[in-house]
Image (cartoon, rainbow, N blue to C red):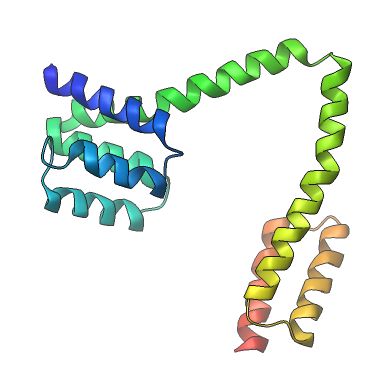
Length: 171
């Protein structure tokens, strides 16, 4: 029972103090290696969680929990990992639900919309510049993608086709 409580507390702490994912690996290393798992077990956990689909942080939690206390340990570590963000999201949702009819909140959201749009354009431009191909081919793919999106084509299909066109014409 002591190990399960220790696992739960470690994963609560790690998920409250980091943004999860790669940012939590260093903190998790500090909290678990030498106390609950060996260095080799931790390296295996990080490697395995990196190649499997899904959330690295949740897979790392389950692996470490399982290595420490079997299936109950995996469940406890997973619960400790998902509890903090779940409670935070529920709290934010409850606050926003109470404030949804407030006029200032609607104005706040309307003010955020252009700022987020510009931010997305800025990020897209940075990605486009670092993508390697800013020649006419890249511009054609970008304009065709924009046209497809404006015609309500599914974004996933547009991105997939743009990638395939890039493989065919830019390699």
